[in-house]
Amino acid sequence: MPVPRHILAIRFSSMGDVAMCVPVVRHLLEQHPDLRVTFVSDGAFAPFFEGIDRLRFHPSEPKGAHRGLRGLLDLYRDIMASDPPEAVADLHGVLRTRVMRMFFLASRTAYAAIDKGRAEKRALTRREAKDLRPLPTTFERYAAVFESLSRPVSLSRPLAIPQRKLGEAFRVGIAPFARHAEKAWPPERMREVVAALLARGTVEVSLFGGGQAEAAMLSAWEDAEGHVKSYASGYSLSEQLAQISRLDLMVSMDSASMHMASLFGVPVVSIWGGTHPFAGFLGWRQSLEDTVQLDMDCRPCSVFGNRSCWKGTRECLSGLSTERVLEKILQKLDALG
Image (cartoon, rainbow, N blue to C red; front, side):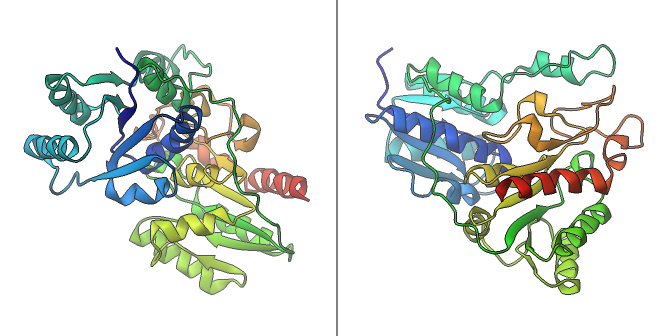
């Protein structure tokens, strides 16, 4: 296969997984100056890719114009009419992208898809005789797709990330929610962490969240405390990213906020419950030392947190004390000086 000079990369969802594509694509373009990339994803995620040279974002509308088989065919036709790729990198590996694969192969466009490692992930999350070991990271799995298209990516090289100036007060981001309950620490304990941080007198807290109920809770926290600002409602993704980029530290679950902070080199303390960093979804350039989690025989019980706790107790989260999480946060703040 000739070395492609224009690759179409597809990753429709979810927010955190799309954010994890960004450093890989940036490395890819930096290491291959003759290459162009068109990235196809939900139009809401376009801000992740703003300012990347030689990258064009092609929005999809999974709940609108590009829904169903006819919608995917229209998306394919839009892509081919605007800027036909020489190869396609499927970074998602789901039914929708497999349908897209048929269209591209019919036009003799080279196609490579992600190996999600489903068998090894099942071994990691089964109830008994777990194979508890670190699996290839999602970043490495994305890079392997491009390598299959004769465009290898070295993820060990540094990326230039603008340095942030620290003010007199540390600005700490708090993202206390996650898409699934098995990944979310009890919010009342995070509220205790917020109060303890504010009591130091040198910390300002920025709150980030998702749905309407979450935004209402964080708004109540903002109203009750000084030096607390919620960005959970009324702010676009671009505006939220701008605020995250100015943080000194992010505290999050295994969630999109962890990955958004990682894009800007912001240190993260992440809290893990039913999921585990070994599944490959730890944030970019983060280490196990940045995590707070309990060693339990039943962990992890799922890759994405979408399975209910089979014990019905969520001990992996309820057993994490406020003091333990706060200690990790203070360690990171002390390291920042």
